[in-house]
Image (cartoon, rainbow, N blue to C red; front, side, top):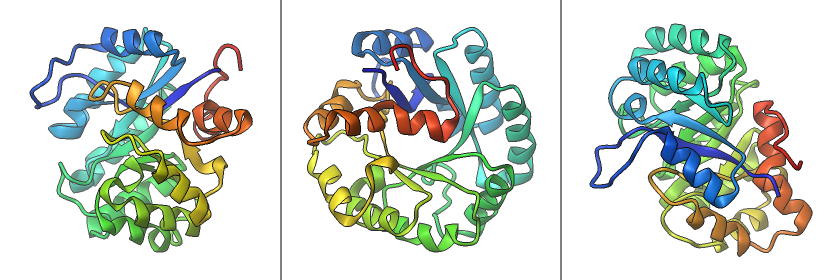
Length: 248
C-alpha cells in the first residue's frame, strides 16, 4: 500500500544522535515502503527559518520523492511572508511549518495569530508543532481564518485528549500522531471523540525517530483496509495536492 509521510525532517538536530543528510531520509523511506515524504529543515526550525528553507530548496531540487514545508518564524512575520511566497512559487514546497517551542510563540500569542492570518491569505496547509493544552484554542482561532487547514503535529503530544476534542470541533484540523510512545489507544480516543478517519494523517518524525514507531501505531489502531489507505496516503494526497504514489 502506498505511504505518504507528512511529518519529517531534513538535516542535523542539536541532539545526541547521528543524523545524516537526505540520503538517510530516502534510505528509511525505502526500508519502510514510504513513497513520498514532506520535510522541514532542522536549521529552519531550530535556528534560522530563511537559511534553512533555502538549504532545503536545494535538496528538494533533485529529489522528487521529497517535498518541503517552508518554516515560518512568527517573530519575523514580514520576512517569513516573503520567504514563504518565494518557495511556494517554486512548486517543491507544499505547506508551512511552525514550531511553537523554538521561537517561543504559544498558540494563543499575537505572533501566532499574525502567522495564521498570513497562511489563511495564502491558503496553504500548516504543520503545527503541538504539545501543550493550548491546542484546545485552535477551533476558536480557526473560526477567524476560514481557509486555513492545520495539521496538529504529534496530535497534541502530552495534550492528546485536548487535541482530539479540538479536532472533533473543527473540520479544518487534522491529527498526526507521531511521537516516541507507541500507544494506538490515542487514535482510538480521537475517533471516539468524533474525529473522522478523513482527518487522520500519517507522520513519522523521521529522521529523529525511526518510522517503525509510527507504522506500529497504525498497524495496531484497528483500521479497515480502506481506512488504512486513507490514513497512510489518500488524505495527505488530497490535503497537499500531491501526486498519487505508485500503486495508488
